[in-house]
Each structure stands twice: as structure tokens, then as C-alpha cells.
Length: 319
Image (cartoon, rainbow, N blue to C red; front, side, top):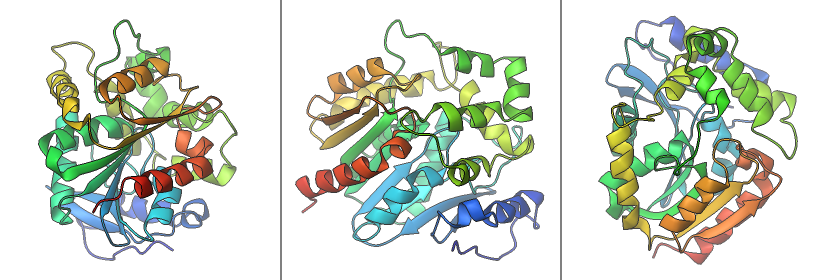
């Protein structure tokens, strides 16, 4: 059972009460057997997992998932690693501020991760596991601290601009329009669509699907879902564009870092062109393709990836 630390936070706000409601749902409690930790991120409550002991493994999620995405991997690796899995502000069990109260930018996401890992006392010998927006956030953090990062596990993500000629999928284009705001925040179309379309080997079990949707159950609780899509920088003048450029340039620091890529080949956003770009930038990475798996590759191929991560860590020990 999740342990919720009972203490006053922002006056017992509806946001905190909402988090308590999420954790009371059987769909979440039954599959998320972790203790909850919280950090004050400059006035906003950030939730994170901190399980086990040993060399740290930091898992960074994307949109519209939350730390629940890594539940099986975290439960497995906490046996002999210290596993740290944050929920970004606005996501999962973290506080969900209004758009005007929190910037919801890539730069702030990186700053939040940096502050959390410093607060947790994470030093050297970090293994990163990244997915979706988590790849961009975590690798921007890694660019600040390249000496700390010793192993990389990459799951359908990017840490660079879209490959040349790559168009933005229509689903993301639609979400960036006024109509998209209504669909994403009013009807939860983005989260519901992801829970359906991002798995291709087998549908999510009803309780798993409910757990993914649980934190995003109202207009106000879907601010981060929309802002993640709106914050994708497509032009040089867009906020975050320069940060992505610098992060991409910094990937050369990790050419010799042990890396493993597990890729769902039926991902309609991070498709084979993104995989090719990763292979170009990390030519020594071990690559595992899953032809029948989608964007939520860790859901589609959880058993195989758990075994692969174990083998990858064993083959690349941190002496």
C-alpha cells in the first residue's frame, strides 16, 4: 500500500485532497506498492518514489503518463538499486497548479529534476531510464552533469529536434489548437487516446487503464497534459528550442557511455526515424526492436524489457 505522509501542505488544498482520492482508487493501490515522498519545489508539492538502496537508477516519465509507467521496473530493480522515480509537477501524484501559477516549460522541468536529485542526495554513478518527454528532460539534466551518468536505458523518446523532414503527427497538431484545448482538458481526449493507441501488442487491462487516467480526472488536473504538447518547440523562436539544440549537441559526451535502447516500432510519434537518429548519436548502444509494440513499449513488452535491463546492468557493472 502507498504510504501517504499526512501533513499540512498549502492549507489542505483541493489539489492535495485530489491526490488522496487518486491513491484511494483500487486500480492504483493494487499495482503501485510504494511509499510516497514529497519535495517542496518552490511552493509546489512534487511526488516521487525513492525505493531500495545501492547505486541510483533514476526513471523519468513523459506525457501523459506518470511514475506508474515504471511500476514493474521499479519493483524489480529496488531489490539491489536505489530507485528514484519523480512525477513532474502537474502529473501523477504531484500538485497540479494552474497554468498561470507554474511555468510548465522544459527549462523548469530540468530545474525541478536537478533540485529533486540534489535533495535526495544522488551523487555519482547514476543510471537513467527515460521515455517520451522524460528523455528530453533527463538528457538536458545529464548535459549539466555528464560525469554523474554511467548508464542509459532509452525507451521511445528523443533528446534532439525532430529528424529532418519529420512532420508533427496530426494528433499533436490538433492538441495545439483552441479545439485541442477543449478536447484535451475538457474531454480528456489525449490521455484516453494514449491509453488506447500507445499499446499495440495487447490492450491495457481495465485497471491499468484506469490507473493511467486517475490523476487526470478534471479540467484543472489536465493543465500539464496540454502544456507538454503546447511546449514542443518547433521553431527557433519557440521557448526551449535552444535548450534542445544544446542538449542534442551534448549527446556526444555519452558516445562511450553504456547504453541500451528498447524501441516499440509501431510508435506513431517516435517512429523508426527517431531510432535511427539515436543509433547515429550513440553508435555503441545495444538496440532491441519490438516490431509489434507501440509508444508505451514498457507496457507492451514489460517482461522482455525487465530481463534486458537486468542483463544490461549485469554486463555493465559500476565498480
